[in-house]
Amino acid sequence: MSPRVAWRLESYGFQRVYDYVPGKADWLAFNLPRQGWARLAGDVLTRDLPTASAHDHLGDVRTTLRDSNIGLVVVLNHQGIVMGTLPAKAADQSADTAIEAIMDEGPTTIRPSEEVGPLVERMGNADIDGVLVTSSDGKLLGLFERNRGEDALTPARKPPRNGHLGHNR
Amino acid sequence: MPTPIGRDDVRRLIDEEHAQVVEVLARPEYEWAHLADAIHVPLKSHFRDIVRDRLDPNRPVIVYCNDYQ
Image 1 (cartoon, each protein chain N blue to C red):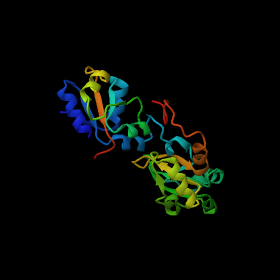
Image 2: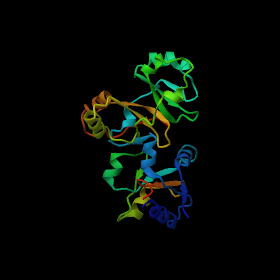
Image 3: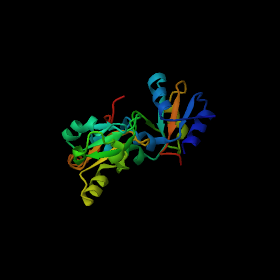
Image 4: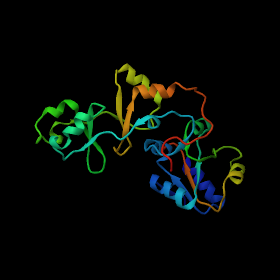
């Protein structure tokens, strides 16, 4: 639909008309600034998660792993893409163990554009307390925790009139 | 011909060139969520009037819908 509108604007004399082809779905999947009454996973993120590099060895991250308040460390590559997770129990292995060899590859992730209500319900049915949130290109954004999602649903459901949700520009 | 752009260009045009952002979906979808400060201009009757009232032809305009479809 947007191409048709874009062409019509040009026909009305607008000189600089752009078509954001990937659209709203793309914007929301990157947790970019928005307005509206939707309650999305990106609004309820736990950020600053403990992370490690895929090239690290266990000795490099043992302290981080033992201190983790989420029971794991997220393993990232040099671009911040999620490569796997390392559970706290791995801390007992030898220091020269390569992270890449023992991490859990391919953890479940969701996009920040997921609606909180259905997500909380699914997580409750599966008895899952938290799930990693990444942008569409796989970059770590944070952790969605079910209890925080439930809290976010508690206030009055009347949609807000204005206000920026997500990151400020 | 309208120029197809991605996310990074949208942000640059908004921040640096004060682009107007237009969502063309139906009102319920717009109210559910829309790009910050996007104007709702549905493709329906009185479209030209809405454009005349809400958009500045001297500023760049970015149009979007839900995704590639």
